[in-house]
Length: 470
Image 1 (cartoon, rainbow, N blue to C red):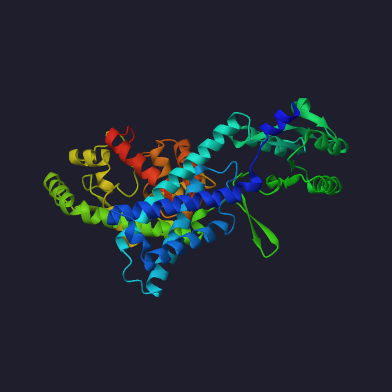
Image 2 (tube, helix red, strand yellow):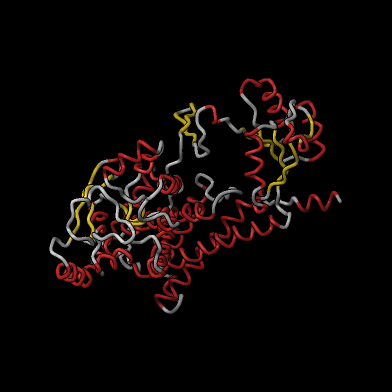
């Protein structure tokens, strides 16, 4: 039984780093071969001195990027999206370094098309490999293998919260054994293994891997004792700070100013320069494609129909709240008759101000297309919290405490709230509260893959038709 138990806890952590790097090198060289076949139809060109030099550089740079800051590391509860985004960032850096070397070494005979094929192949097989690896690990863990035994010191609300997180999904690979505490709460009494004096004997007997400490700082003597036990028995100890002293939010983030930890209320990926650059580049490229490919043939048709149906301008211009709550002029195709309530009253179902063609372009979201100019100019993003009327933002900021948090990001043509059904008129306060909750979640969890996912879901919703689009 002991052998079976050890096998069930088998982990390749000692060799994972080497295996991960070797596997990536195999994938990289596979991409090199495939790109040569796609470009030249044979592998003969790869033996040219310049091609061999670039291939060697590609291998060395990728290995260096993997070993830098533990890029091979996959946290058990990390989302697949974040792993894929980390891989994409490495690919961008790799391509940039290779381009610099090719230019610096004056390798004029290197086929640029072959390099393009290489990155397309490498990008594809690398992401597929990462995705399958994560799925495979999750499947293995769900069967009871590759797990870690854990205990929690502190049978309280904070400790129970951590237990729920680790026990939420079997694929995380954690086996919770129980709590240790001097005080026994009725709701957790069945999971109490003993007091703090019983910890050392238990961890030695059960081969515990990790201990989570959910104790208040006033128990510093107990905490120091637990640290000593863990360090003497090669058990990893992790601390769960009681953030409820400062905030009820569970999205806080810790950063370090030299050696001093600083608590931030929420995580904001778009505060990092690289993420800002990625999102900006995506916005500019995506909006430019829409402007060049769709606008030349669609705009004249839409403008003509708007003009024929009712007098007034083609575009509807309105001041909306943008990033940092700064107002900007938002563009839309005019979908209403000219009226004095446009800046104060939201459009409702069966609104008499909406023209017949206006109802169609609102239903299909065609009226939003001019906002791609706002994206190209930098006032908006393709994806983000929807921009509200200035007076509406002022009204709701007084009613909803965290309303203005959504203004930390640029407003978007579409957003996470919209693809989850929260679009159109907000009849009740709860409707806006739900929209704000989704907007804040987007700000805290942004990734390029999430933006692409939202765009795809937006297109699907437009084709299917949405009940709240009026």
